[in-house]
Amino acid sequence: MIIESILTTTDANGQVNCAPMGVEWGEELIVIKPFQNTATYRNLMAHNTAVVNLTDNVLLIAQSAIASPVFPTRPAVRIDGVVLQDVCSWREVEIETIDTHEPRARIATRVVYRGFAREFLGFNRARHAVLEAAILATRTHILPREQILAEFERLQVIVDKTAGAQEHEAMQLLTDYVYAAVGAP
Ligand SMILES: Cc1cc2nc3c(=O)[nH]c(=O)nc-3n(C[C@H](O)[C@H](O)[C@H](O)COP(=O)(O)O)c2cc1C
Image (cartoon, rainbow, N blue to C red; front, top):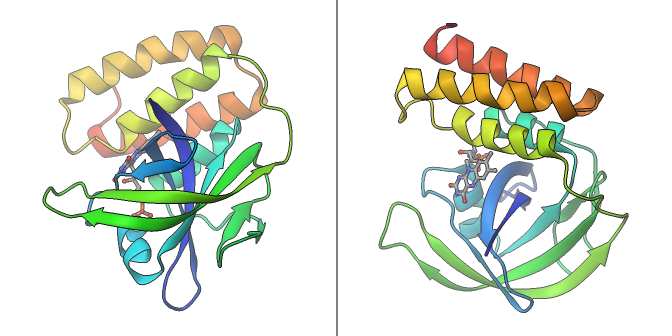
């Protein structure tokens, strides 16, 4: 099963990077699959650790999908890394194996610490809609313009029906970004 996370990694100078990543979930092993042209991949090669942050704050996911924000963090417990402040729970992981045969690397990691901060509330359709919109926003260079605009129109209906303020803000941010990238309808 793929779980959508925000990965926090650090470069050789200790600079933190936050990026949404869908990871193959396991209790003991988590597989991270970053494209080799991402900062996440480069950081994982420089440091062999990461934090897999699980959050219901989709604004963080939207912001880190389209830019390189530095979010508030605290030190990780077991590894040399950081945990997002607004996290529900997290896993601290160390790299076990790296497969770079494909442009999207497969990095198998071992869970060395599990942390819990706050409750993850139940399903909210707007949050899932924003998640889908964030993925589309990272693919404007691959997908046809009409498909992206049609998907955004459909996802906006869900957001309008079920969102709170944070989800509205996240959707607006992504819509502005996508319209700037492919042109508004
Ligand atoms: C929900 C979600 C899941 C994503 N999963 C991945 C992934 O597994 N691998 C990947 O390379 N990019 C993934 N992306 C796209 C990256 O987050 C995006 O390319 C980001 O800009 C990479 O950032 P970085 O260069 O700071 O590492 C995902 C985006 C979203 C919104």
